[in-house]
Length: 336
Image (cartoon, rainbow, N blue to C red):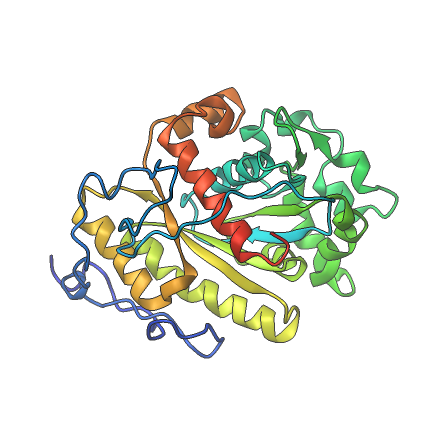
């Protein structure tokens, strides 16, 4: 593989350094310079952990010992919500799949969850059985019309404790119309304020861009989960995303923090996937979730039936992975 295969990109921070707008990600110019995986993974290592007594220092796919996370207890009361944006400007990295299935896995713990479809494509709505073209009211109306309340737009899903704020192509017009608004970056935060006490977790499925809608989502959020496909070009996109996060932290939302970076579409049989995951762990250390979402044919099937993997195939390894991810997210979030 020659050096022109992957052109030079931005700079990565050294391992375990906090993200700041001045720092960029380092991605090697040449694929040959990618570090080799530090852990020799066996079939047992990359299998889901089902030991009732915990992982017992089993090495996970990230090359680190898996933590023994407690089973989340049902909360005594509802709210105030922890607002988490699922964000990556690169498309096809598993944002929507992660938003739906993470939301369903958290809802299984007895927490009240709201999923906000903030992508004009309406993929999260479709993934939960809602047809975007049939919507009379969507998140667009909530953003642009002062007389519309959240309760008029929010609808329940087939999953207990999981509600949806749906979207359709109308949302694309909001990107243009919000430019003329005063304090346009705070529009989503304003409309969410009345319902923060009604939920424990609010997940925002962001569009694959770094435009005004995504900035609104970051401004309204306490935390960010970054789904990252275990593939080289997805790694490169982290540079622009971390720069945007740094600017939002400095200028709009100082409370914004990265909850974690999630490896998705992982295939432990390929050296390339392990190299990319190892590079991310070297750069971000404990910011990277121990849970990794592996490739499976089950996810496309769940989109067709309009339900999450936790109800479509509750005993599958994919469902187990998202339940493990829910444990990590709740352990990392102050409201968890």
